[in-house]
Length: 415
Image (cartoon, rainbow, N blue to C red; front, side):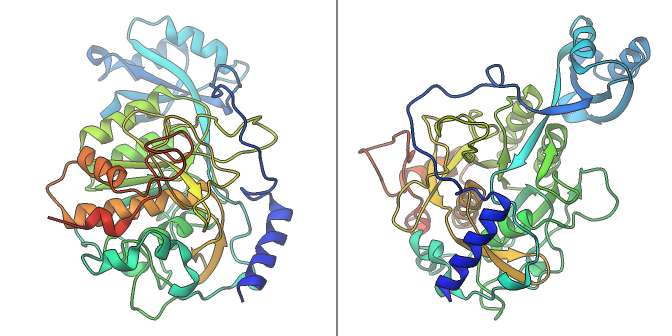
């Protein structure tokens, strides 16, 4: 079965451009910044943060004065999203905004993308019903041994900022708490693509329910936050920032972001800082090589590159860094990210590659640690996961593997 699955997955990658096709060479180089490469952004929207004294009335008065329309706000960050009028450009509007006394900063509304494969949601030829023996990543990170100590607490909630989650998937529905949709569509944060459902299953698919496989922390809860969509793994930074703030304000202990881009956004950096101040452990995919955009795999992606975030690279079953995985001095740890089988919409299962798949392994271990040691701060949880990781590559922390490949059993061991 495994060879058939691998063949089908390879054919899918050829058709859709998965993370591991083509392979890349890890060349030395300088990380690409948004200034060196024009990061993609929405041509019809800009983001503004107001100075504290002007936060209450700044958006309305400034929009009126400059002839702009307010599209939304993130009150916790004193920020607003404004529409770019017909006939004007983002550059010209930003020029006007940055000269206003009440503005702390103004920037484009950058695009973020899922850090995983973009295959079809439900392909009848890849309708897999895996059991634990097919989930090599769980054994690699010693999850079954960790389950002898804790399978996770229902009090520990992991926010999944993604394309939504299949709210009726039999392996997930019992582990879901209410979430929210930030993509401008009606209804609950339902997943029409598959990326978010796959990520959620890696974190907390149920164990022992005779359905499919299991997540790293099968006793914990998932909070679906839809920031990409409606039917593709792409979103705007304003949605990610607002979603992260909402998660921090509604009880999430961990936030997983299997998304990003090279565009460094001050708004997203502020949202990360806000969530960290609320003691949320933030885990993010380091990013995937794209031959059309990158010349090297040591490219800095965001939000993985922000201080305090656990940036996660992807490894294969031999503990080798995946050829598509971004790496660099900002890397925290690595985790399984090749041929990872998990839930997808339609009561189905599928294998995927990407740092998108590695990140939720770390989020799951963070959930186990917070369950086992509820008094640890977020910073202490991050440090514990790093200190108990299996060292790979050069001795000590290095650019290719960070502190090493995560070890769930070691992270929850001891008193």
